[in-house]
Length: 57
Image (cartoon, rainbow, N blue to C red; front, top):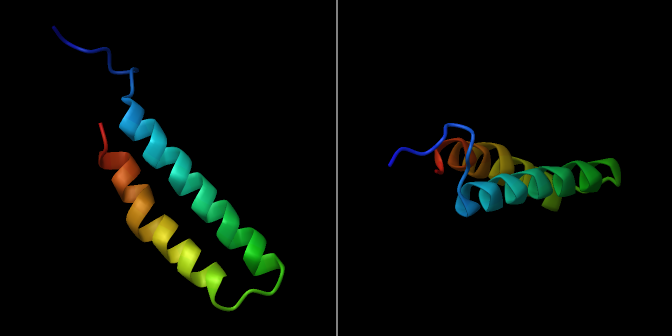
């Protein structure tokens, strides 16, 4: 049975939500002047979680 191309798995939704949350945390910390957490959160979000969210299914 084939799945609809518009149906995403729970894992894919979870990874996408984690990526969005981590990137948002990074930007919020960056606005507040964060020099350690902001770059780490943004790099982890964009380099690790966003590609994982695109590949997860």
